[in-house]
Length: 280
Length: 82
Image 1: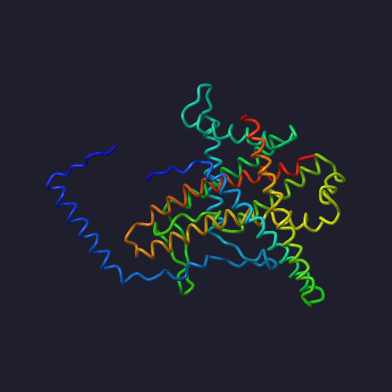
Image 2: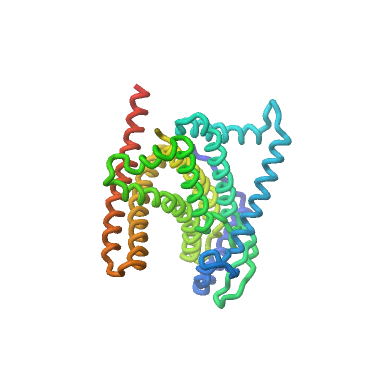
């Protein structure tokens, strides 16, 4: 099907002038754009704690706290407006949650662990979804200029996404690892759980241990790579076209589309890792 | 020519992506454990090589396990349909 588009003469003249000016500005801009330097640095502060714990990323902490407040407010708001005949918002949330519940029910073999796993998976899903979407909206942030001083980004960058920081992702992945093993010990008992490590035969013990440690690494790096890589891709693509196109479209694609898929994949994998451990 | 990408394309490409990530992360973990054990003990790179090889073997083992599980799941779905 073809939609006929017709312009009047005045519109044609306006569009012609607009595109000519656009092209002129783009050509004039072409030689002047420099690749922004200092983007590899993030704002960090030192605190007097031993080695690894001694550095903080304040932007991550601020945005995480903000997201938590937003999510808790939304949850209370949702609870206050619960009705027998659901409104639009309520039915949308119910659809997502019941879909997740069915998924958990399929994977988790033990009946009494379905609800805890469901709570963990949906909490992770909602937090990561909101933080990824926040990474697709232009907003206020604090960056580091090339000479090392702090600068305020007013809508020249997206909101700082907490999942674009590896620390957040590793925390959640290690949390899932611990939860899966604790649930397995609770369900099967310590002896049966330890037997799982020498399952085909005792020669596979080091492989199984390395495999267990590899799970949180692949789990966290997948999300981090998608979100941080998306940011770098947007930067490179907008530099290559010399900011002829506004990067908002790319931010939208990487934030909303890739972000939603990755949030879903993260929670699916969390369910799968717990489900594998719970198998008898 | 117009072709629509089906939803199952993402599902299938995710399996392949999963396999790659699993293998690489296993090798990475093996290498890291070997490096630090080697640094803190004899410092002659023997433990590094042993653990790197273990990591490679475990990467292959876990990757194959993942693929076999996916194949089993696909078979089950096929049997359910017929």
